[in-house]
Image (tube, rainbow, N blue to C red; front, side, top):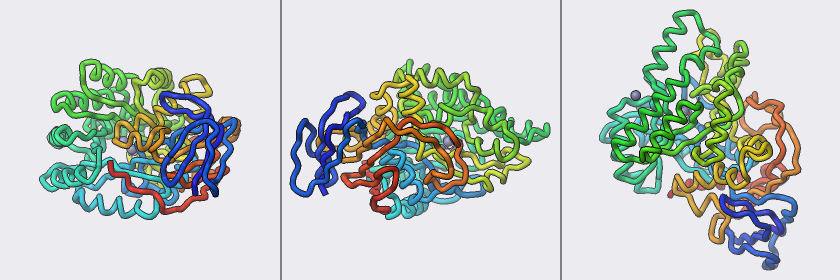
Length: 454
Ligand code: URP
Ligand code: ZN
Ligand code: ZN
Ligand code: ZN
């Protein structure tokens, strides 16, 4: 059915105006004042609301075997939660174990998403080992439309790769013109510090942050940047959490290294005192890089407002309370990750735009447009133009509410933002021209999401 969205305030990364939008089929077919629509068109009144391009979360984990367990979401739950929160596309980290071939990982990850995701999705291809087979598979998948790789400099003995594999991955990425996303923490330093702290009897979740301090991440970031510089590849630092790491990335960019920066909602809003709560209460807040000292947040917000930090993602990675309890008595066994896929947009709007940290334009840019541009989805996604996919968020700035696990659609039993106030919420969300969310409820087709080839 065609849609005519009337009188909304349309906000993109570079425009702000009031107009009507006509959607026919999967795309936006007209933008203007006083548009008329063919018979049978559904009319949506967006007066007093914003119309944003569908938001893009460039870093999520839905299916993830990790630290002896599995992240809790399925594409059914994660995509519906994403949509209710205004995210219409996500990029999942496809991370094979080091003992399986990338091709096997590809079959498994795409098999789990296909027919189950309600929103559109694509993947960063995880390189967890380097050999001829990996290289051949990467070449094939890039030829089929994949646009980005993922490497971990952390997680020694699990996903982490050595410098030889890093160099080869970046060399190939440079040749193929794809971006390499990287988790930047020095794995050796983390392993040494974990051993030292455990030997001293420091076992609680409050020791997670001291086991991977700011300098460990700054080293990982500088290390990645040096490898980008030597190979000429384009890189993207995921979940950068602190000022020293930011300085390392910006200093590299200053000397010409092609490096982009992502921050994630937990680092912008939560701090390390959350993980200092005893036992499983603290474990709920264990992720890597860790939640930091609060003094890091202002510089991150400033860099985000300036556009020096490119994107805001979630690093959505849900483990429930019983999984978090696996690390009772040994913080190195707490599954790392915090769920947030549903809450990113509302939190960024409330604590970014409403608090005066971000302009509306920069909010849209950081949560949608920049990711679309970096990862080959623009202008199909990430903007509102004639010909773009009709992924739209009609956003109600008059909404007032609170976040809670009890009302969340993510498949988890706690919220890291329990009780947090939000001052805005998506009212209607469309994916390629079909209404997927209305009045805060999912009303779409659960398996309609497409794998985006770029
Ligand atoms: O703690 C985190 N971030 N868990 C997910 C895996 C990763 O490193 O992104
Ligand atoms: Zn990571
Ligand atoms: Zn180094
Ligand atoms: Zn992640």
